[in-house]
Image (cartoon, rainbow, N blue to C red; front, top):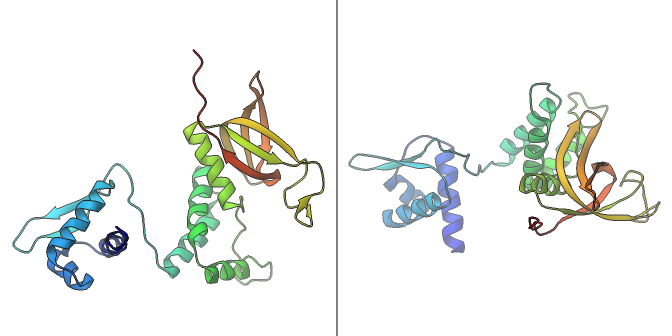
Length: 226
């Protein structure tokens, strides 16, 4: 399965970078037979990736429109371009700020160390073409909270009364607070991000600033009341 997954991922990358690709061309590039390419394409389709078949003597494949986007495979320069673009538009009024931040977090989580160093250099106040800092710097925390909101799953939060960056020797300077909360929505503004959640037996609404959350663990879904 590992070989097929790697090979199919490379086939997907080829299809994303161009239009129609013949079966024989794909087979030659991958060093396998046509039957193997057809099995790989069938496997990709089973994952929900829309791949259309072209009719004709040689046949071929191309990516098609579908109900959801397929997983994109970027090279290092493409990933860097996407990150910089998202950083520049993260405060645009007509864009969903949560969607921009989660997209940014997904790309940054998988980017290379060299790209991170380039971003650090570009965020320097003295950089000639400075890029803005991300509104939510912790990608893993943001994605966990966003998933919990979308799936309506409770969270176990560890947070402090002051920003989570205010640590001494790796430990919060103030008391550590643990609480379970049912996330309702995620807000992202120019001042940062916050989670609105229901807490306690009376489901009181509270707002937690992500900058003060040290960790968030998704718990199993709550059972509906009888």
